[in-house]
Length: 440
Ligand code: 5AD
Ligand code: SF4
Image 1 (cartoon, protein in one colour):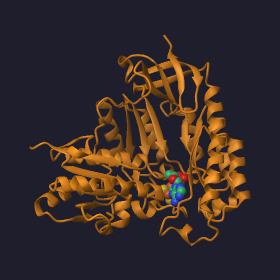
Image 2: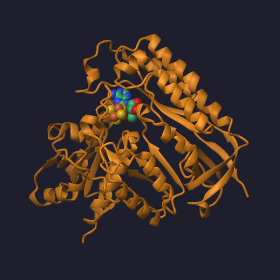
Image 3: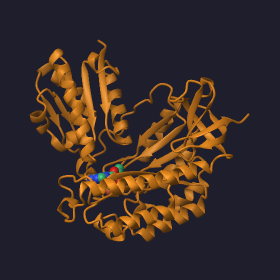
Image 4: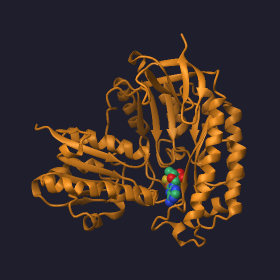
């Protein structure tokens, strides 16, 4: 088989990163080898995200960069994949006529056939149909060489229809994978050196909802805990409305489950939460956080927050700030509301001016930076278990890994530590990482 080069650019969330791994695996069966130089590629795939307008702009500007490459090398195949491809379908060609194929979120498994058809028939191919069953999730993507952490998709799609969100429209209804398939995939990952798995889904707390077997996230986690070779389990993303007491108890009674939860709150105002269709009140959220901390006092809690949702008054925004002060998250991913065509929020009045959204975001982020810095500083003097992932990005003398609470730790050490669980004494906490020393 002739060796051909694939350049794959990924935008957006972990789900997209995982989809890209699957694309690379499928295409390796057709002789494609990854390159990080787009100029050398025979096939370029852009895996796009559509969650906010900024992500869309980035994908199109990257696609624009590829136009000259196609002009220089007419046999180059350019594919547009992911959520934005799903949204636009064949309209992509009117914006960028040099694109050869458009592949939607359910059609990854057909990519090799689509590429072969473009090569042979020299015509454009578009596939954006939703398939009734789990389509691409079962593709086994071996982790990149030297990595000890892997993502495992346990479900696709979402049924929640939060008012601001395009995901249910672009990834389809929620469907859970069979637990045996997931367990089998994780066993295979351990044979490839993986020690930590992160279970992925838009709302993992409702995993199993449509399975006849009665499986749910708690039973799945408990089974993964029994797999030899797996040392750590994580899951993301959790929806507060579906976070059960039984799942919270797992943080105390399932030894391999790491003490971290990503629990997007989105807003601290009951009026806005209702308008967002989130299905919980600020009080419900606070109670869940309190219960989590009672069950597992060292748990780290991270969140997502949107500022400037339509109708968000200064009072609503202040309620979000008050909630942050009460909870003191370990970290927050915060965003300005971005209007997405076709979502319920488009019909709402009370758009917040861009400058005001920016002001709120900046203020909120500096508050969160203060909280994160303070939380990280209090870890100085503690001993943390770290799964060593590899060399630190900042220094050739340092290795790097994450604590069970998902914080990055840098410490002096050599490559022989990679893939090991070590105890690290924390010397100092910074905003984005901790500094430490391996304990002998
Ligand atoms: N505008 C801004 N942020 C959004 N998110 C989802 N949709 C939008 C939107 N239209 C954020 C939410 C979600 C995270 C993945 O992205 O906070 O939890
Ligand atoms: Fe979007 Fe809400 Fe589903 Fe998350 S739970 S993917 S925010 S609709």
